[in-house]
Length: 292
Image (cartoon, rainbow, N blue to C red; front, side, top):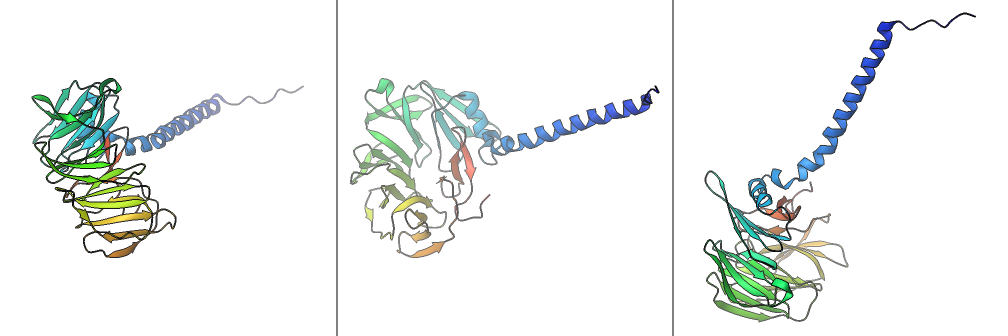
């Protein structure tokens, strides 16, 4: 019986090298393609907030909330017992931490001051002004939301009351809201208008004294964004599925292109739209711009 011809040694070597190269190329392609989404969505690689996010993550690795200043040059995060603020300097990012327990919400006021609500142990909630010298109490509060304005900040209480404060903590206005679920605050680009959405309703107030701004909305509001130009806002209607651009002061309405939009908030007059990623701020797509 004849024996099968043996494969020359050089052919076996070539085959092994080809298999090894194929495996290496496959592994390289896998890691390259699998790492792209991570790099694209990494908070520390964000084009606006990358340096701040690296600082914040170093200060508080596990976070429960964050907020951004109106000029997008400061951001703060909090955990169960720590608050950290990072600020962009001329040549470095400055970090400061405080031991404040039970923080539920926070915001930067129009002057760049940081405010938080602390409710340690689920007991009484206290509004605190946080400075380099420490945290100063400004009374008990049932706040479920804070937002910075041009003149200070607004506080949304759990009972539906809206309170305007100056940057020094003095009350400047109060408004009573009807009972609604899922109330949310949003401040216009120039910081002089405050919008409250919830249960399909939209209400707008002058920020300093909370004087109501008369506004007619033709549908139940499902989503809301302030836009950069003037007191214009984009709304998405819940039942009808269409989008409108509203001129809040003049009452004008224009149709907007329907498309999928991510929830985001305008940081300030020149700031980007902000969305959360890993409980840190990341740059979001302009809701009127092309989708990413």
